[in-house]
Amino acid sequence: MTATRTESPASRPSKGRGGRPLRFVRESVSEMRKVLWPSRSELVTYSIVVIVFVVIMTALVAGLDIGFAKLVLMAFG
Image (cartoon, rainbow, N blue to C red; front, side, top):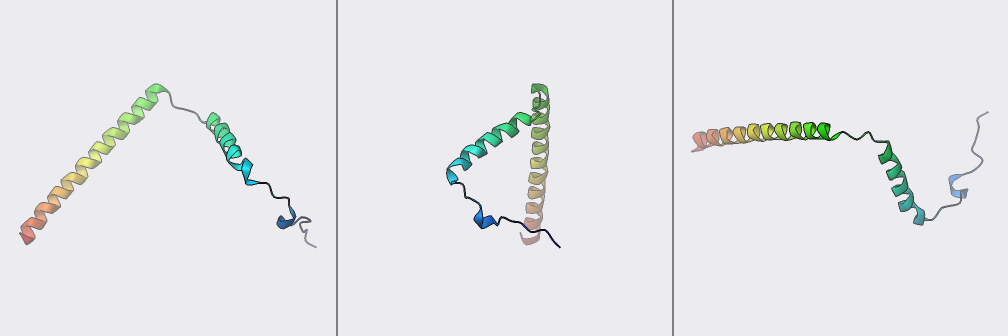
């Protein structure tokens, strides 16, 4: 014999939508308090790493773009 639910979802009392945004904000603040925030020096280090990576990738993509543009001009010139 299998167990069945005695209460169907339709028979539950529905809560109004008025409390949902407030509950969301309260739960969000609660979760943000659990976050382990980086120190100032870690933040600076991570920021520098990201900026250097973006500069390198931008230079790589720009170099490839210029190289392919010259190839296309040579081929169809």
